Every structure is written in C-alpha cells, then in structure tokens.
Amino acid sequence: MTKRSADEEEVAEVRAENKIFLVSVRQCAGFKTRMATQGREVRVFDVTSRSKDEAVRCLSPFTACSVTVGDVSRPAFDVPFLANERSYSVEGVWQGLKVFEREGIDRKRFRVKFSPTSGSGGKLKRGTSTARGRVLGHYAGEDRPLLEYAEARQTIYLPLYREMLDKYCGAALEHLLEAHEQGDIALVDYTTNADVLDTRTPLAHASLVKERIHQMWAERHRAAEEAPPAKKPRIIEIIEID
Image (cartoon, rainbow, N blue to C red):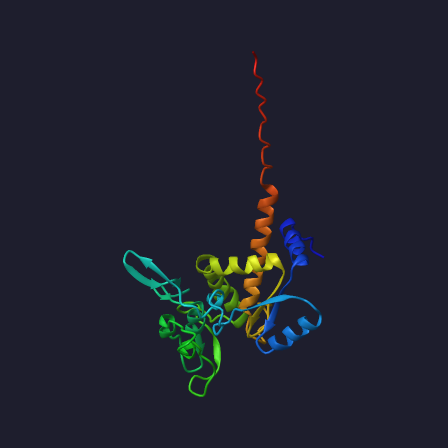
C-alpha cells in the first residue's frame, strides 16, 4: 500500500469531520427522505446547469465565461490543439472537439452562450446520431491520433474545468466551503461518477467541486495552524512619585 503524503492525511482528516455527499438528480428526493429519517441535517446544493440556486449554478461546465481585454469581451478559454480559438464554456470545448464517423470538430460550439432559461444547452450537446455516426474520439491536433474517452477527460476536460473553478467560481466555492464548515452538504449532479477512468457514465463535475472544497478547507486550516500566535499586549504600570 502506498503511504499517503502529509497533505493527503490532512485532507482525509477533514473528510472525516463534515461530509460532502454526491447525489444524482434522480436520487435527490430519496436522499433527502433518508437523511430526514436518520435525523441528519444536510444542506443540498444543485450544481447542474438547470439549478435554481444562482449562487452555485455557475459551477456547471455549461456556464459561459468571458474575459475583457481593453474594451473588448471575449471567450474565456483557450481551445486545446486549435491555435487562436477560444470558447465561452468548458462544455463547448468538450463537445466541439468531438470527432464522429461522419462529422469532424464543430467550432460553433465554442461560441454558444448557454442560458438555463432559454434551453440553449441543446446547441452545446453533440451525441451519436444517424447523421453523425458514433463518436471516434476527441481532436488532438492535425495529423495526430484522436484521444480516447478517458485520455480526453484528463487532457481536455479536467484542466479546463479546474481553470474555470480557479478563475471564475471563487464566490460559489466560498459559499459551499462556508456551508461545509457548518455541517454536512450534498452536491447534486446528473451522475455521481468520480472516477476519471470510468467511461461507462459521464464524469460528475460535482466530484471536482468536492475535491476543490476539500483542498480549500485543508489550506484554510493549515494556514490557521501555521499562523504565529498573537502577541500578548504589554502591561505598563505607571507609578506616580511625589
């Protein structure tokens, strides 16, 4: 068995205190009932693109992010393997770089600005169809072999989603961290798959949110422990001499 590092031990200790559950949309009602039956208080946060909670909905990979350069707003993410190409969303990159039997990459997906109320998510998704055929893999550059599913997750999806968390989701992560400091929380996603190598079901982005919250908590508590103790105020006694 591989010995865990000090950081891993610390994160494991954090996990042992307040829990973060991953719950699928379909299981959510049953999960709430089960927790209530056990007398356990768990705050539930829907982090999908259809969430009604605006404080955490931005954690969906469908979220459109932009940066302003000078007076010009442009898509936030560099598209891997395509020079000078940018995308508004992580999902746009993931879908746009798919290569099918009868359809190549689709740059239009990079420019879709998803809206949870307009139903524009359909413009991002690209699945197997009679016209397209089956998915062959993800584009990895001109004259290079396509990336297989698990490799594409590690090469494309994970770096981009973590970039999104770091640069554009600070307030949402702090909101969840504060809730986690107070007790157990549950993150609702369409799947609960946290294994990047398990390609039988889509990867739950909620698992990456959970990972980041654990890291933030560990960093916060480590910083508190390493902070120098507050200096005691000096007491000055004033003696009056006649």
